[in-house]
Image 1: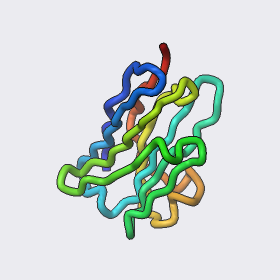
Image 2: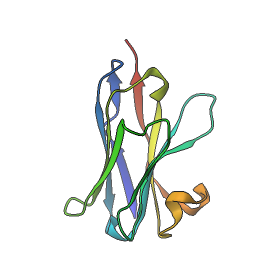
Image 3: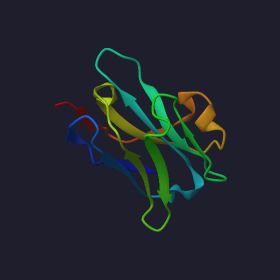
Length: 124
């Protein structure tokens, strides 16, 4: 599966953005899909993830209550709705897929296909 991430941009603190991860070549329905982010000088972290088998969603503590992951099967796209954005959310955001239904709570190494990343900048 090939992934295309989009939707990043510059937003003020407290604002919202919706990221999209569009799949091609295969249906995303059979994949666990995760959103990750990497800020300059920091390690990549998993932000949110939706499980392949039952669409159960996982979110990092730092974004719980603010970010929501969702899947649109018809559009073969997974979204990350980000509300109440903070400057510390500034990073390049990547989506990735795994055939492993336990990948959302497992190692990043379980994610085999990665999108190209989209920049999110939260600043006044």
